[in-house]
Image (tube, rainbow, N blue to C red):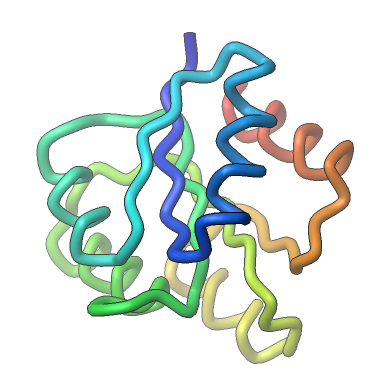
Length: 119
């Protein structure tokens, strides 16, 4: 079973992502802010990090930078964000993000990307 960490502060989006993945037999861990995710990543390993950008305490880009700067083992990363600007996608890529999709998500596309990143 593949382990996925979802970092999302919106409860509706968190429930949607978790329900989709759990229905496909992924083991899901949830974090509602970047600092909580950081602390989890220091202790546990995952096959995929699904990350929002606009988060309380520590935003998604700052989390990725902290992971990179501290050489924390980071899984493949999928950013799911309402931000659709090219500069955001370029920043994400520079910080090691593997893929970037915008909200609202297309469920089939979301699942396809998750499957590619976890295999």
